[in-house]
Image (spheres, rainbow, N blue to C red):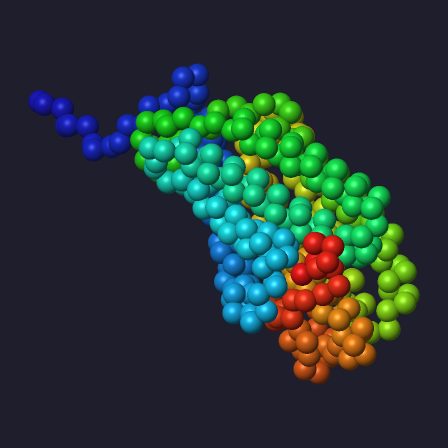
Length: 323
């Protein structure tokens, strides 16, 4: 009697030296990474549309002097570099692709642009708080250059190869990264620490002399943005510094560093604009009420993205770092 034909089942070749249990565990980890990247991209996209009215306000402003301020250009770069950094990540984590290395390179270019543009915005914010003190500019500027150099160095070390088609997720295979890769996040933590120190050093005096509730809220929110960015980078650095047994966990933390840097950097720019408007109003003897940034009856936190300030002239334009 003839034996029954084998059922129609897909055969998946196991990688050399890997058991079925190991392969199933690996697939579960890859699914976690893919979901994390997709969530991060979704939040970046949501934040982009949430702040789109502020970006449109820049383009529609009648005062073209806004485009003479470097911070404005870096705000626009930051807005789109977050998408450039996260969207290609979908191709080497979730989607079948024949251009794995191109996706990795594009993502790393976006990540470096995020760090560069947000870092410059942070620098301008500290410069504005300290009213152009040279030693502060030198210290913050040096830390920024060190950070940017570290990120560029690490970005060039990411490589991927195109593997055979897989039943699900991406067929891209990431090659091992150099052991000193966490230096990029270490440099970000060092830069964030310097920014926080100078912000805190100036914050106490500013809060003591600022009578306006809006002014105090601007300073506090500015500190919150810097603090959240620093805490995120410290967390990611801690995870990246773990041993080889945690190699599959490390990629899940990376997208959130980009996400927080984009969202907080954009809000620091809007905070810088509102700070400049407060300075103008104080010089003109005009009180700046909370209605200037969207609240009609009570103090409204600047952490919300809808901050509509289109007055871009200010006392820092002559020094080249204001808005």
